[in-house]
Length: 107
Length: 113
Image (cartoon, rainbow over all chains, first blue to last red; front, side, top):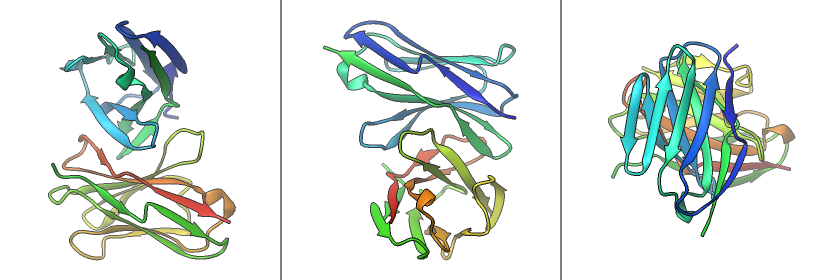
């Protein structure tokens, strides 16, 4: 069964801190997605990766295929980064989602 | 920038009624998806659709659910006889390829009374 676990479930940090969110999955993947869900409910794709590392602005995503583990990092965090971050594993034509990490950045 | 749109944004219906949720995917995308999120829970896959056929569906997607691409632009999710437990946010998504970055619509909040 394809399971996706995220940690931590909740994370509160001060503005400027370096943030790490972890994701582990149980079965091999075609691609691993990182998504951001805003307080209003909308979902935005941040990254899709199947190996190595990707960077977009202050966000960095890494994946270790052998360990079935991915991390999302946010450098110089800002209150506008406050959202739920969701890891999702794409395989067999469907996404399996983690429960999300609720990130709150305090000014 | 192209985006996925969904209508309505909020639908209230009585238990047992049929509802149709509508989505307009990004125009050059070929793969389409429906997901749902019950309040306070994680997002769940419902169905994937490609080349006018269902590619994959979850256990949630039973005989009460159907999807259709009635023309070149719309992608619909029909729930034939709604139940209280169908109350959720329903998201449509599309991608150009598979696996591919998925672009999500803003969601339709379905409330079944």
